[in-house]
Length: 239
Image 1 (cartoon, one colour):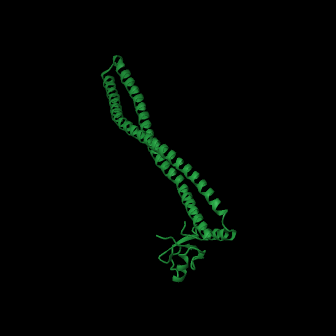
Image 2 (image 1 turned 90 degrees about the horizontal axis):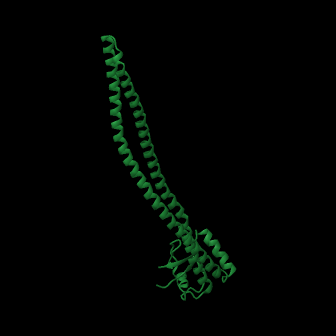
């Protein structure tokens, strides 16, 4: 920064650059956990979809087992009814038994029809479940991969942050105590921006016009000059 002959001003510009970078890193680190959380939401949503698919499949399978149990009972009922034919003594009893056998047979057929329909439904539900399992496995892979990537980036940013803070400390140690005290006051009051450029006679902090005479002085960079509007420290940088 040979274009800034004033040492204290030069140090202030350097510290502002460090603080801006520190703020930038801190803001980036702040959003990284949110990115992980958003990825987790996607995974959890797919896990819920899978859980529902599993529940639907399990319920249908249970219903099929129940129907198969009822089918066995119906078959046993038909068998027993047919076994009674040899015991029949009158035509009236015979006709009544045939009616019972017919009704029992119809019940058996109805259950068999329900089982066939249910088997088709289970095949569909099984395909849905398999697809959901595939999706969850893929989302788990992506989540793990992105999480590791983000955590690595967070660690790299932390290391870079320590490095910049160390560099800043070296510069701070060389600045006049009153100058750094005023800088810290401004950095707090002006949301992290205490030292700014002047471009085309405008303060790049508050965008207010700098009087020509003061602008001429600022271009020399040999004094610490404050913006009349926002009080930030101003400096000029050649194109």
